[in-house]
Image (cartoon, rainbow, N blue to C red):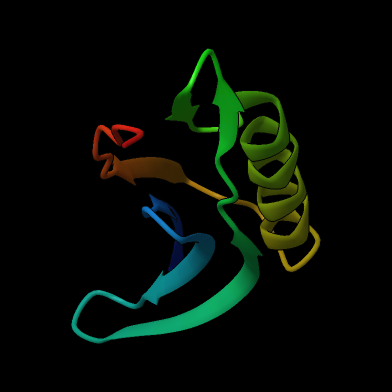
Length: 86
């Protein structure tokens, strides 16, 4: 069986990463394709995720994973927290 290549995008409060999983039917191996910081921006006294920067890093992660071979599927996990200025 040709291994199935899977891409997971994990967007966390402080960083994000693109992880490639290679599944051969019984065993899964995972490797990092791209890691990047998640730096918030302040707007009107509130911190927000910089969605344009994150989008660029997501595209970079997808391209890095694709450079290693065809990707069968992509999953995304995001965690966010509302920040309040004091």
